[in-house]
Image: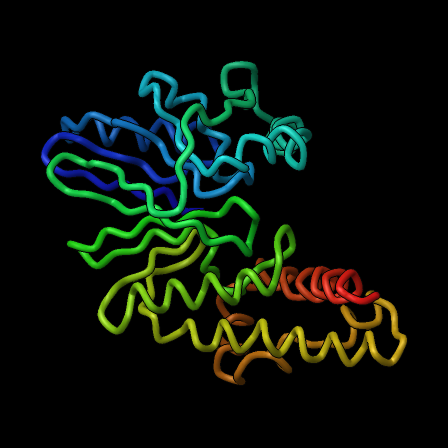
Length: 263
């Protein structure tokens, strides 16, 4: 995943800590080497790969998130630190200890970074608490996982993500840059394909639900290649094989959404 540093004069804000403690320590060391003072950490959402390093930012006194983030860490993510400590084989010194945000932001909150500003926007969809950061002067948007190589709603809502991607599209326009939580930096041109993908998943999943088929059948039968362009599917298969599991998970989630909307 990606951690993003924004600074102006000697003040800095970091968006998302990193999963491996050593990676977060290296990040903080490089910030110190630039003689910058970290004024706060923003968690773009509650997932462990974006919050595991929170404990290393305690001295900033500002761990910032949407108001839902801390609650979701305590409920949906309550077992994640133990899982990460076990899977990553972390010793006592590196052990991930849940460290919750201590400051909340709302849609439209502004962070003062030196002499510049960063606007924070609530973009639910990937998760209910997802936020993005928009630095208008630089034309750069920090997307967290609101924008991913494969749009992912496994912990959120597909309708909400479509709306949020349209918000991102309207902000970035033609000349801005989007920094994803996982993957590269893109312009807004790809978002139309992302939105179309989610809409196609919803359409095809509706057909399975209407025909009385189970979620497992929809997940097995609806292929990623049916919902993306051939070029995008080939790119994802060639470059992001580790993320291909997101597609069947999306179908499962959308199936649950659609079923819950029916009387």
